[in-house]
Length: 175
Ligand SMILES: CC(C)(COP(=O)(O)OP(=O)(O)OC[C@H]1O[C@@H](n2cnc3c(N)ncnc32)[C@H](O)[C@@H]1OP(=O)(O)O)[C@@H](O)C(=O)NCCC(=O)NCCS
Image (cartoon, rainbow, N blue to C red; front, top):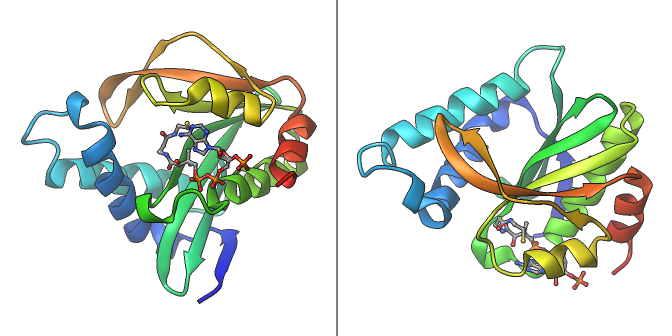
């Protein structure tokens, strides 16, 4: 089945929340206690994605990659003072390495440029492997570790920053 990329709809909240919770149960397990990591984590994800997707006046853009009805990845951004603040970029583990992350990032950045973004940042987990390589690949600058609140929990993250969003869009278009 071919991969399609599109804007997320409110009907995608459940599938995005489930994939997001499943990925974080694995990649961010260290930040949650045993009780929260089960149902409460997914409930918190539902609340977060509903906030981003419901209503006509959404706070930003959310894009998804699908094969048929299966969600393979997602990304979201909000506009803050002319900067596209990309908070989540995630691809289903077994689908990684096929260009889905790059395509999602490129589409999201284009949408955010249409909405008025001139610069961009991408939040990444502080301990992720290959961060410097990833930042370099996309022409961004990797920032210091900062503590952010995610689903009510403090998490160490870093940001990759692009002073010019066109640099990010161009890097996503280069395969
Ligand atoms: C980061 C993520 C979204 C990439 O998605 P993906 O679909 O595997 O990425 P792509 O196949 O589109 O790869 C895009 C480019 O990024 C590079 N890349 C991907 N993951 C990387 C990693 N972990 N470290 C370094 N480079 C990476 C690839 O080499 C590729 O470069 P190329 O186009 O020159 O070949 C995915 O690995 C993911 O969901 N990770 C969990 C969240 C996370 O850790 N994010 C932090 C970013 S490092």
